[in-house]
Length: 435
Image (tube, rainbow, N blue to C red; front, side):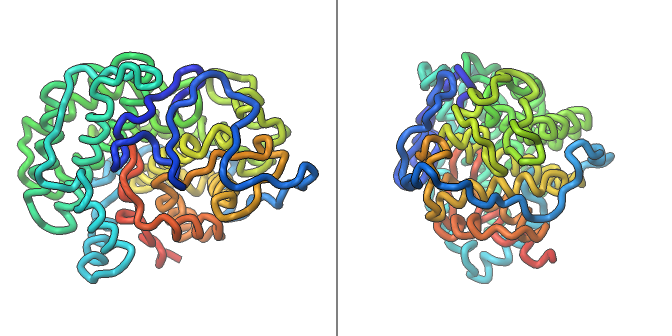
C-alpha cells in the first residue's frame, strides 16, 4: 500500500490466493505509485449526475472526546495475550465453534482449509527481505507475509481446537524466521516490515501465554528479532500515504506489548493520535483536512485531487479501496490492541472512525457515486476487513452503522490478506452483548 512516490509491492503473496491486496468484486489493488492523481479512475458503482448534492454525512455515533484530549498512558503492566485478541476473545470463539454457530463455524473451516492452516505448511525464511517498487525486486516479500499469516492461523487453530500440532507449527514458523532474518531492504522495506510485524506478534502472544512448548531461548530470539530487525523500520513512522504509517503504528503497538516495552507502546499510541485525524476528514476540522505529521502538505494532491471535503472522506478514498481499507484495518487493529491494554482510542475518535466507515461503506452498499466525489468514479473493493471496526464502534460503543453492517453480511466469513486475517473468526459479534 504504497506511499506517495513509493509504490508498494503488488502481488507479494499476502492474500490467501497468493495475490496482492484483495479489493473484492473480483479485483485486486497493487501499488499505483507516483503522485496523487486528480481522477481515481473508472470503477464499479457508477456516477451520479453532475449536479448531485452531497449526501448527509454520517457524523453520528458515540460522542468522542476532543482530539487533543488526554488519553491515559500505556499500561503499567501489560495484559497477555494482548495483541488484537485476548483470552476472553479466544474463549468466545472456541465456544461458538464448539456450538456450531455461524459465522464462526464457517470461518474456522475456511482457515483450516486454507494453505495457511495445513499442518504440512513449510516456512521459507530469508536473511534479507528485499522489496522494491512494483515488486521489483521481490525477494522474500510474499514468503514473509504468508509465513506471518500462517503462524497466526496455526496459533488460533491451536487454541480453538486444542490440537497441539498447530501450536508446534506456529512455533516452527516463528523460529525459522528468528533464526535467520537480519534486515529488510529497498524502498518498501518499512511497509513490508510493518505488515509482517503486525501479524507475527499476534501469533507469538497466543503461543507464549497459552502453550508451554515454546522454549525460553526461542522466545528470547524471537523477541530480539522484533526489537532489532522490525522495530527500527516502523517506529519512526512515514511521511507517505496514511496506510503506511497506520500499518507501522499497528506493528509498533504489537511489538511493544510482546516486549513489554512501555516506551515503544506509548510511541505507537502517539503515532495513532497524530495520523488518524489526517486520514479521515470531519467537517469540524475546518475547510481542509488535518495535515499529516510529515510529508506532503499539498492536501488536494495528497487526497488524490479531491478538493471538496465531507465528513468520512478518507485520504485514500480517491486512490482506491484496496489501499484505503488496508489503512482502515491497520487503524482499527492498532486501536483494538490499545483497547486490550486499557487505552481507548476508539472512544477518542469514535465520530471520526464511524464517519469514515459509513461514508466509504455506503458506496459498497449500492449508493451511487456522486459526480463531485473522485470525478464520479471510485475503485471499489471490500477487502478482508470491516469486522473489527464494526465490533468496536457498533457493538461496543453503540454507533449506528447500517452500511458497514451490510458490507460485512456480504463478505462473511472473511479470509486472510496481509494484516487482515480471519476477522470474522476473531471479532464477529464479539461485543454484541456489551451494551
